[in-house]
Image 1: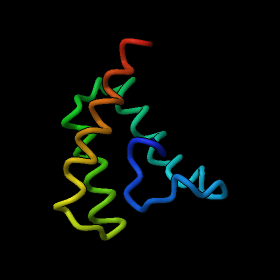
Image 2: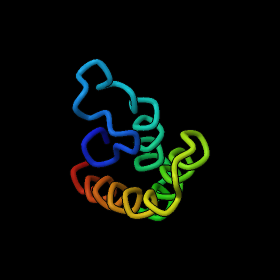
Image 3: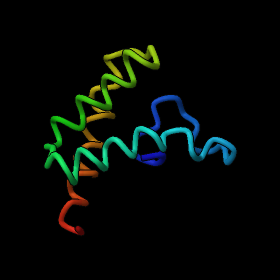
Length: 78
């Protein structure tokens, strides 16, 4: 998630490598236990970025969609 969903641009800061861990845990639970779709996960990530982090919704939609697609593609590895 730090590489593919980095709405606040901290991926290059080693001290912040765990910044998104709580969100990643939720996404993993959605993926495994809820059989969430990319749309579901993108919606969750979008909500975090726009409501919790207060970021612009115009830029976040594509970022969230792309990250969610990558996460859902990982399901085949389980």
